[in-house]
Length: 99
Length: 449
Ligand SMILES: Cc1cc2nc3c(=O)[nH]c(=O)nc-3n(C[C@H](O)[C@H](O)[C@H](O)COP(=O)(O)OP(=O)(O)OC[C@H]3O[C@@H](n4cnc5c(N)ncnc54)[C@H](O)[C@@H]3O)c2cc1C
Image 1 (cartoon, rainbow over the protein chains, first blue to last red):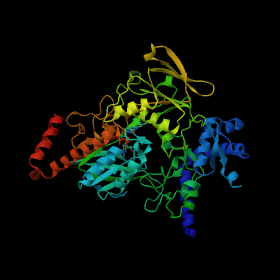
Image 2 (cartoon, chains in turn cyan, red; image 1 turned 90 degrees about the horizontal axis):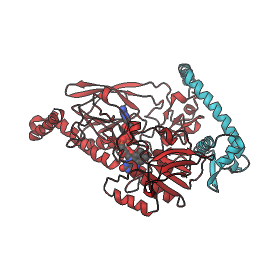
Image 3 (tube, each protein chain N blue to C red; image 1 turned 120 degrees about the vertical axis):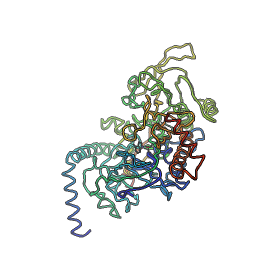
Image 4 (tube, chains in turn blue, red; image 1 turned 90 degrees about the vertical axis):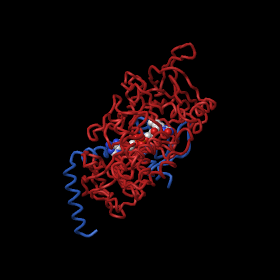
């Protein structure tokens, strides 16, 4: 990208941020909350693969919320399934698997 | 085609199976068609289904080629993410003012590679998966979307610009704004489809409140190979359910909801899903609580009997309410009519509400097409002209006309295309068409008398 294009791009984003002030603020708040939840979930899954109820118990988060986040992490290749424990699937962080 | 004004023979509104089929049937006869779809992809509800009754064909496998055929047909202009704002009479035809929402992605450049999606930091509930899974603020709508272009949700974007930086073809375009254009068409086919009765419509069933009470479209996504979890798991905690129950008429044939009609497909889709579940979870018990089983189509009764033979339990009785135990297992309270009417409570892992069909769109204000008390398009002469509306030159097809299944939607789409073609012919070449013209016009006059 040329210097001029980069300048233009920055100006456009700045204008849009101003125009969409409220929605950007809302999205930023959501992202912050999401990151905090993810941190807890990743912490809980760090040592060994876990089921959704196990992660829920460790973190104190509602099980349906944990499932939603793990589903999202699976979709974007941040977590994988590694077999079952009773009626529940076990999930593992992708970094853990790579180690 | 986004900004230039268009002149076509027919405008089709709605890109579900009915609209796609009507557009293809008209285009194959040589008519130029504009297909306007409000979502970022065509496919309607059908592309989200797992398999279809009564053949159990893979839904995606039969819908995707149709979507592709529409996108590549030389006589069809596909206009996604567009909405008709107003319609005016224009001589013998219509002029539609259409607005295209900005995708913030240049459609001439985007290759659907999804690198922007992976770079985007924010996860949002994915509407295509009924919020069970996530998608990013910028994403390709779903894996088989047509067209395969990304779309950016500016309302949920932090405008970090990561997508723009990573896009290998510089397709992200934050300068886009809504574009207005006109479509001149001589005839219109309405195919705006249906929506479902809200899951929380019957408070006593706990839909929307109890995590393990879902609607049947959710179950379609759970059963679909492209579904959010990749397995049938209950959304409350990811448990593989061992006992699943269906509650029929959970949004239709119910005066208390103001939905007095039968939605026609619920019995069949519940039976279909029950059969698919016995395949996916061979050890699971599956129960269907019903008032009547209505299997109206060709091969449908046999389908029902096959389900019974597979061991699916059919229990006659209207469910009174659903509560849950401390482990979020739904408890169904029901009167067992065939067993002397005792009222019992049965616990399941997951309950599926067979919700009904509501009209997806009211075309009265913009298209001047009258709707009936049930909200679906009025058919002045339903028996002999089931696609003719109260507005000359505007035809209706699929579930915009009333609840129906895919087979009937396709049949009616062919019929709407024929009506529209006859209308076009009658308006264009009166001297050539002769008797045919008289027949078409007479029929119209009779209907509108
Ligand atoms: C859970 C479930 C399972 C089912 N399973 C089966 C099955 O196995 N077999 C079967 O035969 N049937 C099944 N059906 C029924 C089937 O889904 C319908 O028959 C079929 O999808 C109807 O297609 P349609 O094109 O009329 O409507 P839709 O699929 O609703 O398509 C309408 C399209 O119009 C668009 N639209 C709406 N308003 C506008 C507007 N104003 N401007 C532009 N676009 C607009 C919508 O976005 C949508 O894309 C099932 C239904 C449900 C709920």
